[in-house]
Length: 179
Image (cartoon, rainbow, N blue to C red):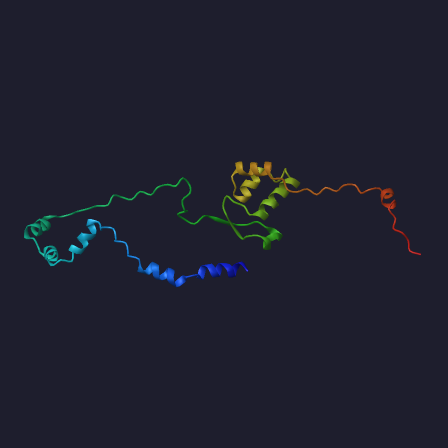
């Protein structure tokens, strides 16, 4: 219902309103800036002749000019360690053993894969006398400081078994027998 009412008011006396707007005098345009007038003068024949005319005095001065330039050597700014590597990083093969299918095959020196990290943490946990920080650093091409931090702050999961409840607690909840 509301749409019909608005349509009636919108279409009321449309022709008269349109003809009234069309018959109004158009406003005079604002005066043009003087640069716009110069553009119209650029089309004149005298200006074109002046531009195309050769001046012998200027031509001789231009022939006497000799320019010699040398570019200074380009300095490469150091981005503070955020630049792209200029050569390929050295890679090493991973030491995965039976978990080889789960991880990447090559790793950059100074880095380890996730499976290697879990393996070395577990080895150190089980045999700390054999798998010392120095041996891990030498084996996986890591810095000793990073290995110490790794062994201190990253601890692999441990499985703990809690004692089962007594049989008395289990037998107290017997299912009902069907007769």
